[in-house]
Image (cartoon, one colour):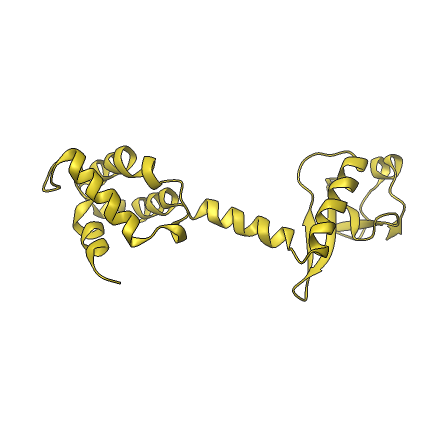
Length: 180
C-alpha cells in the first residue's frame, strides 16, 4: 500500500485484518516504508536490489519518522554506490558469532562430557588464549598466529607437558606446527 507517511499515519497504522504483516510504502522516499505486524509491532524498512536480489531490511533502533527517513536515504545511498547494507550487516553478525572463543565454547559444550580435563582446559583457554585471540573471527586466525601464541605461552609458562596449560598443546600445537 502506498501513501505519504506522516507521524499521524505511522501512529494509526494497523496491519490488514487478513495479513500477518502489512507494509505501507512512502510516496516521498521510494524504497522506504513502515511494516506493521498483526500484533501491532511497527518498524521502518527499506527495500532495494543488490546483485540481482531483492532485499528488505529493517532500520535499526527506535527512530521517529524523520530520523528513519534520513537513515533510509543514507542506506539507499550506499546501495546506489554498489554496497549491500543487509549483506554487510549479516556478514558482521556472522563474524561476531564465529569468533575463536565462540567456536571453542561450542566445542566444549558439545564434547565436554567426553573430556576428563574439561574444566582445566576451559580455565587454561580463559587465562591464556582468549585474551590474545578470543574475540578474533575464526576465519582470520592463521596457523602462524597459533604457533606464535603457543610459543609465547611456552616461553612464559614453561613446557606444556602437564604444566599450567593442560589440553592446549596436544592437538592444537602439533596441528599448528604442520606445514600447510
